[in-house]
Figure 1 (cartoon, rainbow, N blue to C red):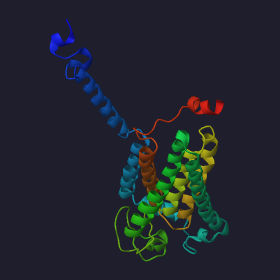
Figure 2: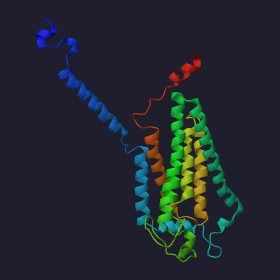
Figure 3: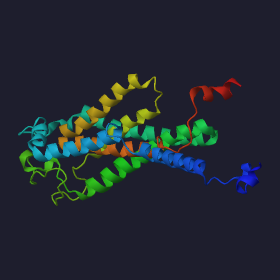
Figure 4: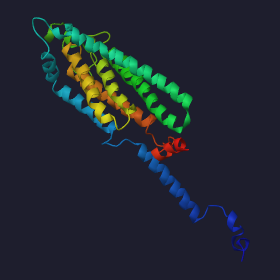
Length: 277
């Protein structure tokens, strides 16, 4: 018998409405559900850890505000105030951050232009990381920290607080106040920029990162500590600035570099094939 005699359709033209068609549709739906699930952040991943840090440190400093005052008091002298702010070496160290940021940003822009001219799958993959870093700097330290938090939360800096010779009362984290009108203490813009310098390690080849991570993290940590020594920020400003910035960086990295559905990255063996040819 032929296919027409059995059901009115030739076997090759039978529509996929039978059991086999539903199986294929179910498999496709499960595959799409798997991609959607893979896009969700894991609690133990960078996004989950940074979110936990933001919530945990916020609760900690709200419950124990004395931690802020105790940390700032380490650098305060009743006779001279935060006298380390006048130290020429520490002031030069602080200015070094501006130079490092400028070099990194110019380098990223030049690198993006070079990758755009180069093209190819490998160049696209590398360009994502450079684009991620520029977006992270603009959104994290730029928009969220300096544009939103520092401009609208009104938290007075340690040098402005009555405990350290100023006139304003201490304000806890996340409390919006009118004791500071602009460029206020919460959170630290320079600590956020320092955290971004650590994030720039994503451009470093994996084999070099262990050797470079220590000096870069130490430099960023000392830049942040410098703000405490100068009486410019509380400990909570610095810690939450790192946590909030880290959360923003992790989300952007997920969306721009690691998101499912992006073009498949070439494996090292694949990337080496054209050069060998």
